[in-house]
Amino acid sequence: MHLKSLLVSLFTLCVAAGASIGGAMACDALNGTTTYDSKFAMVGDPFQGGNWSNAANGKAWIQRTLKAPVNLFGVYLGSGGSDITTDNVRIKVSARLTTGAWKTLVEVAGADVERPISGSGNMVAPVTVRFANIKVNALRVDMTGNGWFSLDRSMFFVEGCSGH
Image (tube, rainbow, N blue to C red; front, top):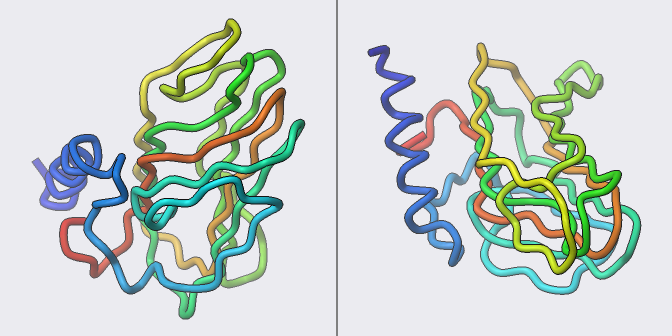
């Protein structure tokens, strides 16, 4: 097994086991300025295994503008989506390349990612996506659908971070 794949697999296990309380390993390379449409609650760093939930119906977004560009090679989407129903739900994880263009990394439509809901809908297991290094300077998660939205236990895999 390739060393990078092994490290990602081990780190994914750590995220699944402990990040729900915001306890994932911190990566200074992912520090930056976080903006969002609204906030109901935030525990830990939502870009490093913590939780963020918004307080607006219909759509939500959260963005991290990094202090410096990083080499990103993967994403783990642990939990996310709407709290009411998965009708018309869409979760899109993107990164802004250093050229200024945005690149979609993960997109889930018509389902929440392992998130409890009060109504009915479709659920999918956590999503891990790996790819060749891309140099990025911002990360963003957009969600649309019904109800309030949450992002939880999600990670961005960056070259040079312990455990990534």
